[in-house]
Length: 402
Image (tube, rainbow, N blue to C red; front, side):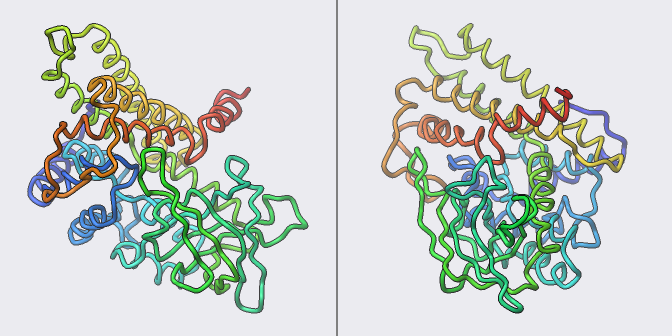
């Protein structure tokens, strides 16, 4: 959806377009296009991060005093939209968009000075230690324990569904520091060095056969008290802040629109099995139109949230609307891809080229090759970051007042 831009904003859009045309590497675009997972592999994502960091744009959601651009919400929207239209990979949010705002909001000056530059430079690659085998949607029931021992904590427990833990050297982690109070009040927020004895990472393969998530085991793991963010027992407040940023810190509509447009182009040459092409099929047109309307509705909600932020307000519970709608649209669009390619799109391969121009060309088209794994991985969208059922409850209570 187009919005009315001021002359300054239009000039900024043109600057972003020119930068992307010149500096976005073709093989990074290909890497993003070939990836079936939520996050691209670090060797692709970190290359793009480095390009943006060199330009000074990696911290595009960060305030200037923290090393960011200090851009307005409208500028951030323009940047995300133009990146999506250019086929740039999604930035890995764990460091840049999740823990960084926590550090500059709740951290002390020493923590800001140490951690924020390392996030921008790529020296630290983060994973998120929230969910546990017995604490998913009921996150406050977590049992990973941190016992204070002088100027350090000793951690024991397990975290699960930990994205890219096998790549990360740091983990931001919710732990239980007090069992004698209300469960939310006994949680603290710690920053954990992953490169130490006592930490083991066990891979969990997704239903599509990809290694993106893990279970992390912590046995007598040491965390200095100086790596606690905020006060002891403040972890639940910090976690709610982080999750609100996660759901409302980015715009999903531009990327969804780009992906739908790619499918529409593919449908113009894909046979419908009846002598025509899929693009002319009535049911296909109906489903594409439905998805397009959903994306436009999502875009309006995200623009409304941007307006709230621009006026100095928090994103608010409307972020649950964006999470709910974006998750459903992601699955809807990826199912369209499976249906577009028919039986050919249902095949899973033991080995498939994911990224890089050096990969051999598959017998099937790239779209057909990735249709099934992308759809299977998209099923997680309605689960991670708060299930759709949880989001519906938040909307009912906080938005509709039910």
